[in-house]
Every structure is written in C-alpha cells, then in structure tokens.
Length: 319
Length: 294
Image (cartoon, rainbow over all chains, first blue to last red; front, side, top):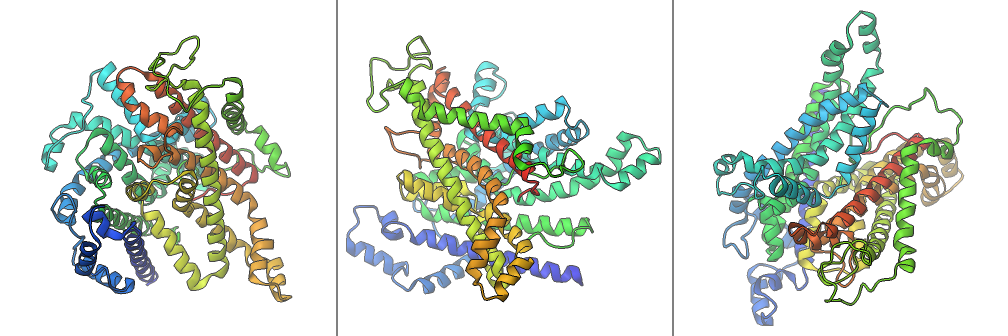
C-alpha cells in the first residue's frame, strides 16, 4: 500500500513537472522579438501580413486561451510544423530521435562499463597512487569541453593515426547508421568521457561506504576472501545507487549529444536542433526541448521507482 | 552541467575533531594547489597585460598565423593578434563572466531554496517542481534557443547563465533549511514575534553559509565551463572582444591545418581553471564537513 501511494505521488509530481515544462516552452515561444510571426514571415513582412498571420495562428487571443489551445494540440501529438523543412515536427523527431538514443545509450553503456570497475578499483586502492591518478584524470575529463575533446580525438585518431573516420555514420535509417560501427567509435567515446569521470566517482564513494559496513566485516571474519566479498556483496550493493543516478544524468547525456552530433555531423536530433537554431525554426526547437524534457522526467521517474523496488532501504523519495 | 564529480566520501580520519576548517583546508594538497592555480590565472589575466602589453583590438595582417617564436611566445592568430596577450585578454572575460554567473546562480538558488524549505507545504511543492522542470531541460538546449532569438552583451550573458544554473544550489539550500527551521532559536524568534523574513535572513542563511560557499565554488567551476560552450553555441561575446571559449571555437578549423597554438593554450586554460575550482570546492566541503550535493 505504501508503495502504491508512493507511486501515485511520484507520477503526479512528474505530470506537474511536465506541465511546468510546457509553460516554459510556451513562454519561450512568446518571448520571441516580434512574436513567432516575425520568425516565420521574415523581417520584410508588412504589418497587415503579420496581423493576418497572428489571427490565423490564434496569436491575437489572450495568452491563457492560447496556452490551453497549445496544450490541446500537444495532447494530440501535434508539435507544429517546421518553418523550413516543410514537415511536421513530430515526424522529424520520429526520424531523428532513435539515432540520438542509439548514440546516448551506447555512450552511457561504454561510460558505465569503464566507470564501474574503475570506481571500485579506486575504492580498494584508496589513497594509493592509482586512486590519485584516476581521480585526477576524472577531474580533467569533467573539465574538458566536449567539443575540445572531440577535436583532439579527431586530430589524433583520424590524422595522426588514421584508425577511424572523422565523420559519424550517415544515413536515413537506424540500420544504415548501425552498419558503420567504425564511424561510431569517436562520437561514442566523446560522449562517454565525462560520464566515466562522474560515475567512477559515484562508484568509488558507494564502494567505500559499503566497504565500511558491518556485513563486510562479518564476511571477512567468516573467512571470505577480498575478491569474493567485492564480487558477491559490495559490487551489487554499490551498483544500485549508482545506476539510479543514471536517471538524473539523462539531461547531461542529451546535452552532450547536442555537441557531439554537431561536431561529427551525426544525423540525430541534436543536429536537427542545431540546424533549427541556425534557421530560427522555432517549432522544431521547442518541440525538441519538450521531447527531451519529457524523456528526462520519465527517466528520473523510472530510476526512482526502480531504485525503490530493488533496494528496500530506500524509503523516502529524494524530492 | 550537473552535480557531477561531487559525492560524499567518508572522512579520512575517524573524526576530524575540533580542528578548524581553515586548517583542514590547508592540509588538503589538491585544494591548495587549486587555489594556487586560480590565483596564478587571476594574476596572469589581470596583471599580465601590464607586463606583456599587446594590441587586441586592431588586426595586424603582416603578423598572421605565426608559429610560436621569440617575439610571439604563443604565436599569432588569423588576424595577427598575439596569442599570449589574447589568452590574458580572453581569460579576463571568461573568469569575470564565470565568477559573476556562478555567484548570481548561487544567490538565486539560495533564496529560492531557503524560501521553499522554510515555507513548506504547497508553496515548497510548487517551487521544487519548478526546479525539477528546470533540471529536465538541458541548459545547452536553452542556450541554443536563446542564441537563435538574441545576441546578448556581457551583462546579458551573465544573467542568462545565472538563470539556467541556479537549480542545483536551490536543492541543497532547501535541504539545509529543512534541518534548520525547527531549531529552537528559530522557534524562539517566531514565538517572540519575529517575522519569517527575519528568521530566514538572521538565522537560516547565516547558519547555511558553509553550504552556500561550497555550492558557489562548484557553481563557478560549472559556469566557467558553460562560458566555454557559449561561444561554440553562437552566444559568445562579440569581436573584437573574446574569451577562452571563443578562442577555442575560432581555432577549431585552424587546428586541422596544424596551428595547434590556437587551441591548446585556451583549452588547457579552461581545463586547469575548472579543475582548480572543483578541487577548491572539494577541499572546502571536506573542511566544513558537509554531506555531498545533488
């Protein structure tokens, strides 16, 4: 029953957050200088043209009325139509989002695959040279702007050592993208770097905390060997909170994808967003922001719920 | 940017005891090194131009794209600016904007979190859902939308960066306020007729000062990193002014032609300063014995 109440509360909270996001996006749309009409019709449009457009698009109605109408269209899955690409925003996002998801999921996977053993190793070798070296590298990886790291990767691995192509896989479909794994390597590495820095740190802290628990002492006293304790107990107990942090990391992953896709010309949602910004294609910009925010809210919600279900020690939600 | 590298590590010694925070900070070699790096960069950017005076406004087409040499230690860029001088000149903007935006974000976040936590109930619920919504929208996306709408001046840039990055500090200060608001001295103040505003201003905030200082340090680190992205996103300071991020994005194409001196110095400067502020934040947090953030 307790869990049921918790779930209801969390889902209602998530809905409230999504509602606030729609308000923010709506306000951004109306913060445009001269309104969206200027954006679409261009600086040369006459006052009459703008008035006609505003009337047609209901922009002459009161803001709350417009907002309710906006929400109504959103509920029908209608994110508007691109100004420049002559296609509905939802179609564009449907084409691009899967490719971005492939990139972010691969980056997250590679990032965790490196971060988890590194963090555990650091905890075991705490305050030894290995710990310091990895901590320092983590600091550096975190402090490096993704586009600078990407540039260095390109310079080193395409020019100095011509191992990988400098351009990400091209193609309309997911299959075409996945059929060029060699070209995915550099974008995925660039996206995973800061993730390794952040999550090895989480893993190190979680492992240290578990290593000081009574059950570890008991296991040691019972004659279990260090490796077995680490594998059997500490690893599992440390992993749960770390993986739960993934939910909170979703916006950072998308932010990274924005830069990585632009840098490597990867045909995902980040690149769509980027070109929309260059051409002031506001429906595309705001549609993407909305989709990414909803994805983040859902990601956080799932992480919270999963952690609560998996780990009975987590009682209070982290509001 | 996110809460990122900062997590709680159990204290090294059993109990740090009555040792002063300042002493504990001074014993943290990484944090002291961070402080030294920040001081060196401040000297480099603000005092350096007095010793190494260069013209960063006018172009000099006779001195274009020179590799590092005796008179230009770090070479020159595509319009003939001395790169060493430019590193100082751009660093001023990066450091000033980063510091100002980080502090602004901390101030907004502190007030927001303190009010939400102190008020409690539905006010708290609404205010914190606004924070959740803000965190759900990646800052880089918002900045790119803003760049499509307008090109801000330096002050506008500080305000925009402050407005997208106050969310994490607000959560921290709210948590702190929740533990402080039921302390006896706050309840006593209320019982003798003190206002809510007085309770926040005189008791909650002064008692949260260590949390606020630590949050501000991490916030400055993140803001300097964000400033580095801003030029790349097309929101940066306008030429002939520049900052490290602007130098880096301007040098991106030059790097393919082998002109490494245009990207390596600003890139290293950003990395060093951001690492330094993070190290200081880590040191302060351990010195004040504050639980992790985020």
